[in-house]
Length: 361
Image (cartoon, rainbow, N blue to C red; front, side, top):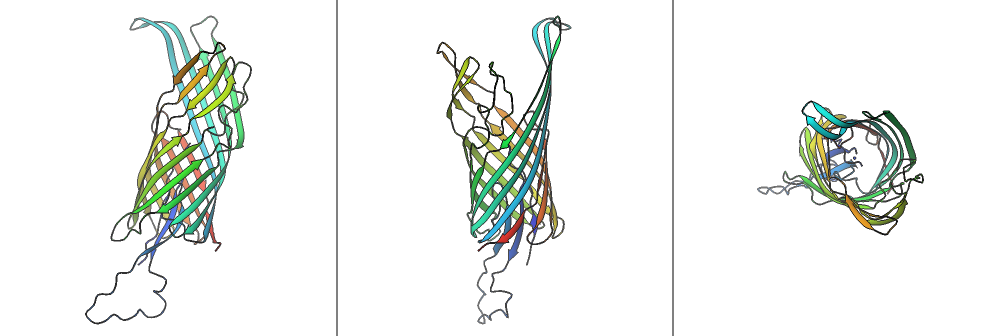
């Protein structure tokens, strides 16, 4: 019996694409010659169904077989636009406002080229490394009306450099026998190799002169993935918690010194279904949501007075669409698209990946 499906989902931002080819196969001894005869009146022993998988999963699929290396070139494009009108003043009547109107029009684009490598150490343990290069640009126009004279403020920023390198390990906890789903434990570490928001160039007033390409803080994320095959589909779900580690920045921004910064931790949830159209082609429909806590920042002025400020929490939710095509046993192509459905999510995120595998031992 054979069942093949492809799964494409995103994880994230920061946000990604999951593509896995799952095949159920009998043990290697079967299919080679005639099956051994069983004694009359006895049931044949139950055979273990072993998954043979190409795993290209940011937070864990059924894993890459022992001795197999998968290299995955990736290109990702993200776009976000913000159009906001604010009013500062007083409301005299429901139709009469006295104050200042400010209009903000902001466009952000991000381009990421990355190479990810995954190695099957054993049939149940996989190691992963991701090397990204990031280019970002941002255009902002702020219009202030109801003042004499009114004025516009235009700003264009960009930044490009190596992004935050990531390391991960995935371990398959069970064999998925007896109709049970597969459970995979994942542990991901994100470094600070990219330029963080406190590493970029600023002018004497502390205004940024370029955009960061990394978060600037170390992050550790344990998570649990569930895969439940139900031909011709595979249902998936992932639950994780990202610990963003506190750091003493020790940088100045104009007349203000930035001290301890505690980035908000994040609860990450995703689920959906991958549906196999034929042995080579499949599509995915899913949803993901990141709940990001407050960021606490300590500021110290010239007089040595310390003030702590907290940012708002973020709710980043996106719908996931994916398509996958397997050229042969070693090469496939995966295309994923995310649509932001909450105010804090990017408008669109497009990811193209082309993994190819090889046996190295």
